[in-house]
Length: 121
Image (tube, rainbow, N blue to C red; front, side, top):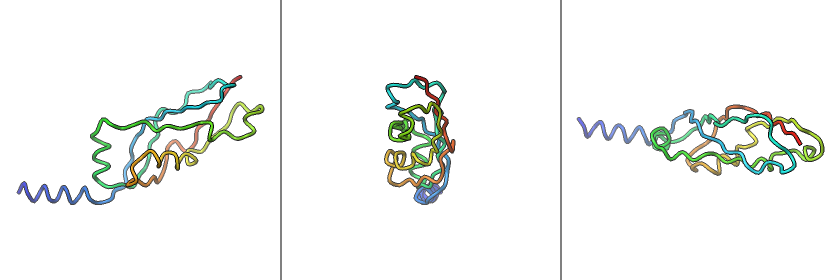
């Protein structure tokens, strides 16, 4: 009985599933001439397609590394002149996030869908 349960469990982990995983986020490389004036989300909820092994590791492990977002890569050029508030769709972070996760993971959705950034001089 134990052997058949173990085989069933290993077989189930080998399949692909869709699940939501919450990841901490670190933002860096803000413009040096501006100060951030609002709170940014400290977590993204990712809807992913991944193997059962990966999902089990993420749900039970303590080694979830924060997603790092380089803000300067996403600022519009006009921002450098006088804009102090703008919105970035988190889907624009997709490539950066995927490069920080396992190759076995396909991101389906990122929540929140967008982030408002507000800066002061």
